[in-house]
Image (tube, rainbow, N blue to C red; front, top):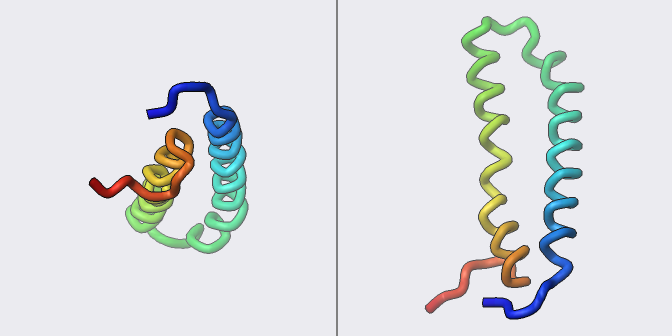
Length: 75
């Protein structure tokens, strides 16, 4: 548990915001060209997948923001 403020939290929030903006812009730019002719159900699955895939690294990122280490502590 940290006892004093750290710059990782504001830096992490800013990094998360910038990273998600870049991720969204890249998907909005290239994904419609790749799947635009697919049926609606196929496009829906792809967009749901890419809407959730960014959550995979989020846990480790939040641990880093709190502790400064990239993994969870082993007890």
